[in-house]
Length: 146
Image (cartoon, rainbow, N blue to C red; front, top):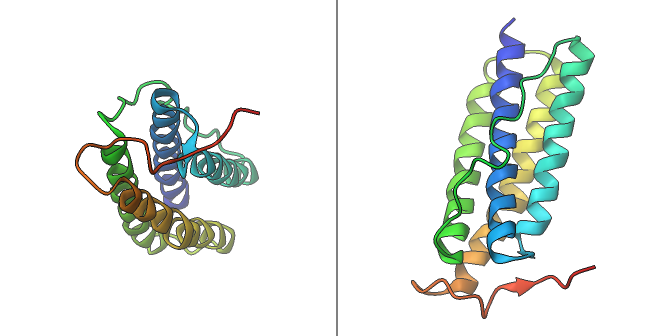
């Protein structure tokens, strides 16, 4: 079923994004927007996993957790976020044309919208805060430990 292939690709992308942003947090600490977006990526994966359950299909495992390399600095991390969210939008645009299932279309449109309207602008602001090639932290917003 083409819809299941679409779901597998979308879930793999959400797993990769979550692992990438988690690696930034593990390397540089709990910085915005990474802490907010890693949680959102987890919610995105959960929304897709619910569709697998609805179809009675076993989802693919997360092959990305703990396997993503750390970026060399925060500037590169922010740029990688921008690039990933642009690619995510294109992926969803392509995948949306490959299924007609209403539940899948609704979830994917919601995830695509979150990526474009919230994640991409947040990573662009991150780039602006970094403001230079040295990738230092002074302009990054640290989140205090709970």
